[in-house]
Length: 517
Image 1 (cartoon, rainbow, N blue to C red):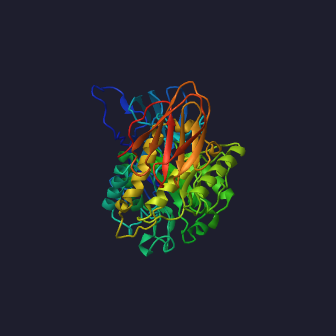
Image 2 (cartoon, rainbow, N blue to C red; image 1 turned 180 degrees about the vertical axis):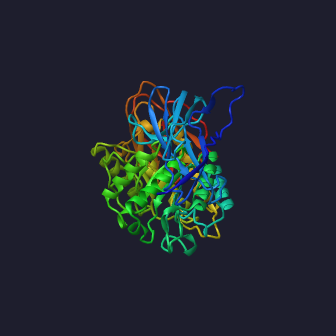
Image 3 (cartoon, rainbow, N blue to C red; image 1 turned 90 degrees about the vertical axis):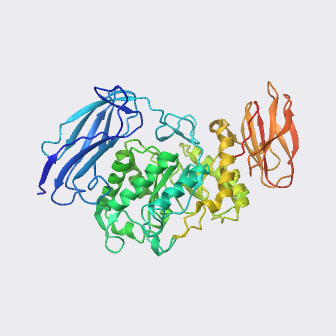
């Protein structure tokens, strides 16, 4: 029997109380409420102590949250600190009750008042407009960011200051998502210094029943900075080069890792869970379904869950209620192929009875000098009603430099700014409206046409009650140039791009401001 000596149940609230608060604590909606406990276990601290809480909302709903071991609570890997974290989703008075296998600790509890904070909360799947994720208390999310370096967390890849500087660079460039993983063996997608695991013992002798707190503290620092800068973490449990670890770990050991990760980071708003990269190499759909269920069970904010697959113009778990968006891989930079792939997957998931956002996260690596290919790719994907990440695979351990892709990020920021100025969640792809290129439209409100090769084309517009405004959009810089007024009568109109390069045409029912950065 494991004997645990409970030293103290010191409860600490890691937020600032609002001015004038003298009674119950006040916690901002979606902000972190943290309880800290001290217990000294004899044995494995990750398994010897069971700690959790049930939080009861003002409306009577209950949310179960697990606690986790955190060493000395200040970044050290040993100590007597356990924590519970919770992000309240509802305004008003909350109550909580602690439960534990430690005598004298279970049954304690307390309360706080949840107040307005201005936070947007986690990303959720919208039932009415399911093609894009939205913030729980905010607008829709248009994804744009980096799909590499996958081994961002590897100790041999970069220092923590370099990681934080890289996040700042992406945020300042207008990116809002970064893809990286927790298990990578190298040297497949990365070099020898890019091995990373969340367990003690490394790759040679991993102890699957003890979590490496050095790794978790590194991840926490990264997530803290991403939260500050408004960058979402597309966090992958297994990268595609995981050295056979997935075949050595038992289901119960794997569940311990998933539970710990959800307990420690489930209160962070900007997260997308990805089970595995190119999952078919080591897993099957049954594994994916069961692991998605773990996250749905243990993650308090129910962040979106997906799985990354091998190159295909279809989504393997289509219709599965455990998955909230795709994580497609499609190995091409050809705009026509990318547009067609997104359109095909949209039809597939809709016919399967569960339409979800179509995110194409990996599509042939683009080098720093291939800004044109990247630009045409992201516009082709977006005008098919999808979102994407740019696969900028050229990062080395001594050169974590997102600045090399500055032109790529600038084009992505132009695209994001344009879409965020439109009711994009209600727009539908319809290439039948144009004689060439790609089209996304909301009849009576706006129409966006992208021409990857320039030239003359015709556009069919329905009859409208008022005249439209027409603008040429430079996808390189975002500058808008008036293209005249489109009459109410509608019909088939002929346009010719300003030159032979790629251009977008925006037809809208109201004047637009310039989009350039």
